[in-house]
Image (cartoon, rainbow, N blue to C red; front, side, top):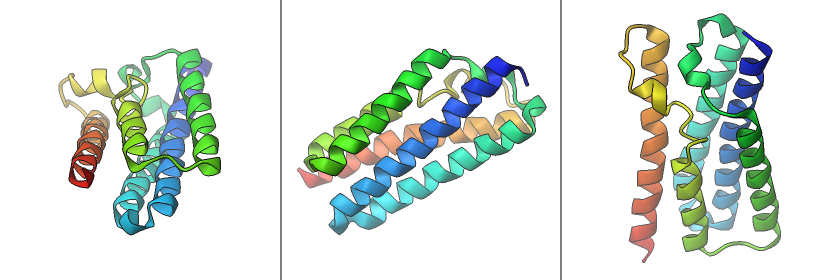
Amino acid sequence: MTGENDKLLYEAVKMELNMCDLYLLYRDIFSRDSDFWTQLAKEEKGHAALLELGREVGDILPDELLCGKIADMNRMNMDMGNIIEKFKKEAPSVEDACKYAIEVENSAYELHYQHLASLGADSEVIRRFQKLNGYDKDHAERIAAFLADKK
């Protein structure tokens, strides 16, 4: 794996873990809905583990997975860290929390598998990452439905 790809993959893992941390914080803030947020956190942790495994055996990762700019991913991770700290100090409303989560889930950086999902599933690795892409899209839809139920 090239140094550039290793850095991109590091940022991708970090992003999944940031999402996990965000959802665990939401679990604590919105304790009545802790099961919902805990499930999302577990799924993000699983995404990070899958990416980390790919990082360890980097030569099997398709280049399409790692399209993106390191600086943009790094900035997104820093922004997420800042938001998490802000929300720890001042809890958001459930609406603001959900809107932020949907924004991140739908962002080009969270959906770093998007290009890969459009390719043919000619290998097990590509099939796994296509499935992971579906989970990211699913998170945004589930959070939107959760928010609609709260209104």
